[in-house]
Image 1 (cartoon, rainbow, N blue to C red):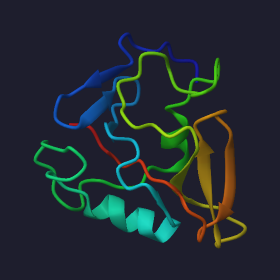
Image 2 (image 1 turned 90 degrees about the vertical axis):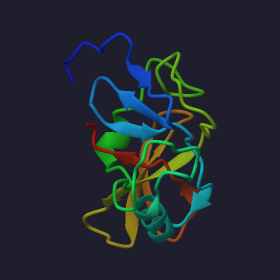
Image 3 (image 1 turned 135 degrees about the horizontal axis):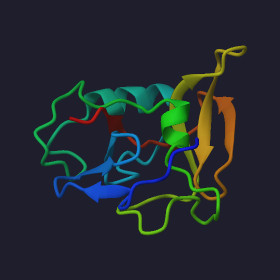
Image 4 (image 1 turned 30 degrees about the vertical axis):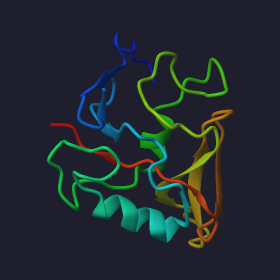
Length: 141
């Protein structure tokens, strides 16, 4: 909030990763490598991700990647449009205009977790047993 977006917003690192120049986070370029998974599967897939998978040549190891929290996933949204609700010119591949899991559990109902819909940019919560897309992230360096 209240921060002018850098130009360019994203930098393709040419190693299967994309840096968000606004947040400093590193995102997997392939935005649907794991397809749709339950929340528990999404956590495990992200934590186990390493170079050699999903087009990664960045030298990352298991444990370097994680499922983004609700606010990190929301930070990708550009609510001035939809289909998708992402900034124009984004460098990601295989973006699904559907629901993506966040790592954030819904506080009053631990059977639920938050998700972000990339078609309209809406945020909601649902049972962790549902299948949504997975988009790994890691800290920048």
